[in-house]
Length: 177
Image (cartoon, rainbow, N blue to C red; front, side, top):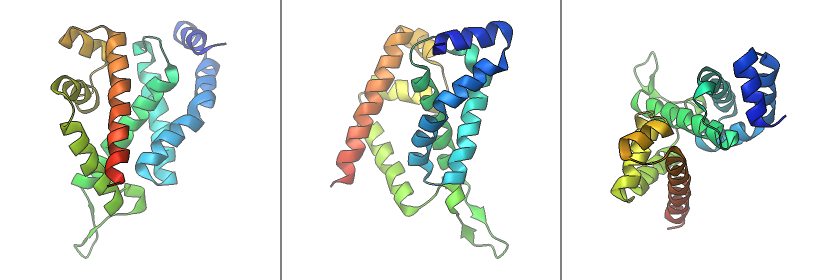
């Protein structure tokens, strides 16, 4: 069965085996995406589970297209949120000293990458920044963004993909300087 058929089967009949098949197909690729952001295996495993929980809860919102890309977007969004929360709320030890651990996903390198990402986002055209902000920071779905900006859902998804690719190139270029 293809992804669309599995999702339809799950949504219509509640057949948990259909969702289990989706999890089996995509766990590896979702883990690969998350580990590049958090750099910690245990944290990445937790985020993979959270990704599939969120997907389970919102599966009826999936509008077709690449299920893998949709899952990767959820996963990266969760990972970035965790990294952001960790940065804003570091752990404080009993001695009163701030402490971060590998499980928190924080490191000097990670902080530098976040700053580089913020700079790369600031360099985007206004419309692209608006799409990124609505999608990642305000957690709007592609169809909601489309309605807000007068775009089709597929156009929003294509723009998101292109923006991510552009940011990736800018990040790679920024790391080589």
